Length: 331
Image 1: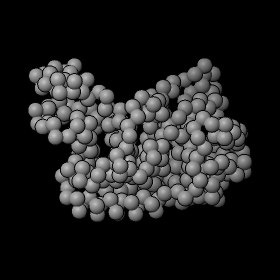
Image 2: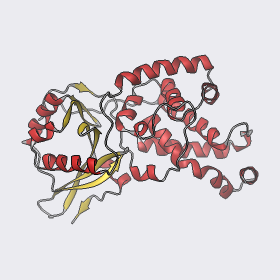
Image 3: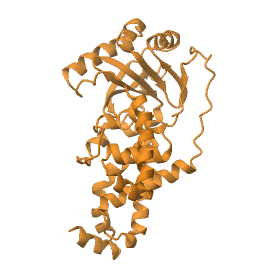
Image 4: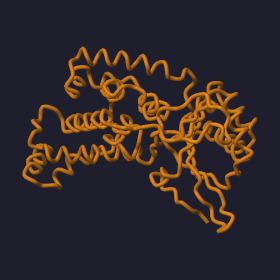
């Protein structure tokens, strides 16, 4: 069937081409998201990948599967974007504007969350024999953030080898590198990722009773602005982040200072609409407008869990809301 579709596509049949490539669109988007850290950029990269595949169909010799061929195009497209990218830190407010001094100034300011609804639509793919990361960890915000700090070639090699499970020879062919170069890049990438990897316990199963019990406690503390109760739920090395602002706070003491400083200047959220992002619990935050009386979207919050504690809080601007189907206003 694929051979017949390929012949039809080469003859200019766009429906045949769509039948060949559409089954892989979702996983290609996840791959590009891991490479780029931005869902918007990933969507653009996939569109350009499929256009390149359509225009270059005559050059497909069939020595690999359509899926591997598309991964080659997508990975190299992402590498070209990364090498030519002029991503610069977003001009930010001074740290003195209502916030304590941050622990760090983050570098991954373009980071966006990835809706679980899109992950659910991706067909299950058995990773190759070389995979080292489980699919859940490999889509987490912590993993994607750490990947963004790798140089482009190391990033591509790590994802192809340790997430998708390609062999060294296959990754080398995909990237146009020698096996030695792939092995060296992978060794350096693994060292960087291992140093960033949390040693904490695994999170509870999604939507389990254990997870829900923790989320219920978190929501009470968070919406009531009970800083002591909120920080008591956190790990010792918890991270508080707010892309695209660079301010990052690590550790319970820093988190306590941050939430104490902002609690006097923010209103309690009137509604938290549950969603899921990157395999993690998340919410759309809504405040009631004093004039219209309607609830207005104020942000998107994603948290990471380690055992029965919170290890990461990341708050994003409302620009990511459409990806989650969150309306701007609610009655």
